[in-house]
Amino acid sequence: MIHKSILGICVLLTLALLAGCEKKSPPPPAGTVKASPAYVEYFGQPPTPESGTCFARVGFFPLRSDPGKVRPVPFFLFREEGQLELLLERLVSGEVTFPEESALFNPFPVGTRIQVRSLGEGGIELALSLDGTAAEMSNLTAMAASLTETAVQFDEASRVRILLAGASLSGMPADGFVHEPQRIAGPDSPTLLMVIGNWEQGAADPEEILANFDRPVTIGSFRLRDAAGQEVKGNYYQSVFNMAVVLHPEHPQAFREGISLSAEWEVIDALGRQGKGEGAFRLQRHEHPVAKKE
Image (cartoon, rainbow, N blue to C red; front, top):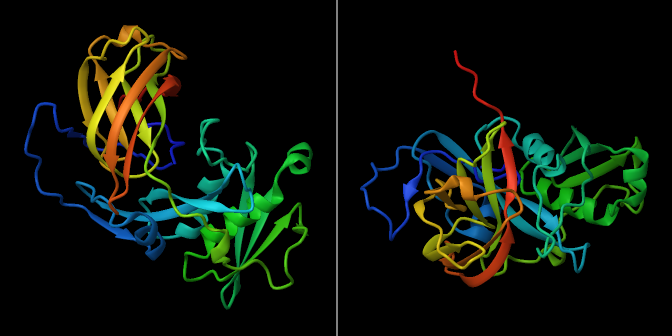
């Protein structure tokens, strides 16, 4: 992801070397990026991919401290058609997770499904499907805020009706939910979310280690150390959307799920917000299938 949960968001293509590593001059970007007004408002101009066309959008997730409020998270999509449906499906699918210390959480239980139907004249209907136990324990206010604010960034949605198990969501206005600016909390300073290892299915050692940030950033400095305080050696890169530092470790056999790693970072986002910090992280495991040979 790269782990597809971050923020779904950190799709790794060709990697550019970080400052401080061996410097090479990459070819001029040949790709294009199209950002929604919401993305530009919260995160500035997005990075440009080296090839193809991508679409920078935002999804909204609730605050742990105030589930009625939501905060934007960047998403990058590679399909122009059906983006509203695609983004809402990614929102509820469970692919986006947050560590316990994060200010955000994903309110949608694993296995949540969603169907999107246009009602015309700016209205859309979102039909949620959860199992009984999950529905009883879910924070429906947080779900409604997350879905509504994510949907209304698209021109075709200004009113959102939400159904749960075929019935209107409790507390929903007769005409549906609408954009409420007061429930949106703007992004804080950029920060490191988690450290993930990418394992090929069945492999003993990870192929790469990823330090995932909560948005695209420019790296001022980054250090990763093991439990003994020794700096981890290897080749360091940055993902094409600048949301992760990627390490190809010199000694991959030293990395196992759950080991403790410490990171220090200084970064800045596209709107000039600076982030600086250090912390301990447990290495999370992402396992991807072995590629089939043709």
